[in-house]
Length: 276
Image (tube, rainbow, N blue to C red):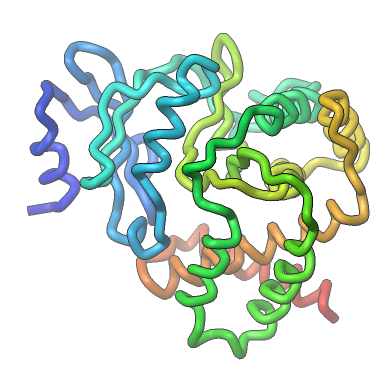
């Protein structure tokens, strides 16, 4: 039996599966009706365990943040089986650029500023533990120059003794939902981390131009957190390396799509040019 179907059948509630909303290498996401409520269900694929995703900490984080209304309300969770159901929120993600407001840079700066000012839950893993795990998964590929240089860059910038914040670690257009307000989706990679990583990955994933970056940082700094642009540049570079590491792991341990292969080639070319 398909393990995803088996996981659904094990849910001790009434649930009717709808259309597939996302079919990625790590998870599958479907619309559904859960106990008569319109909802969304996420099902883990085997590589989620290979990546070391801590579903128990994720569920604890989401439940602790419910009162803050940053995330959808969790209706059911079985982290041991890789199942998460949350209440459906009407809205659109920002993958389609036509959905992005003109002031998207300043809005994201405010959103991340608010997030990073929250008390960081001590039960969350530390970001460096993810990197250590990726080192192990890619140990046989350590002769690859991009992997070596990416790990070396992280080791150098991670020495900064700045206070760790609650970091989403995967801010991208598909993970921001615009409805009656903005919701941040997919907290599976959340951890305690240097605040610059969320800033850096947001800049890269939204391809912000210089003017937008200035707006983004100025909006973020209104929360009383000054940003060093030179150091941020290094974290931007590392965010590209990390995406490359993730894609290499997907290619090695699961099935990588043509779109992801093209992304990996693009990243490899960009990183190689930066080195050369």
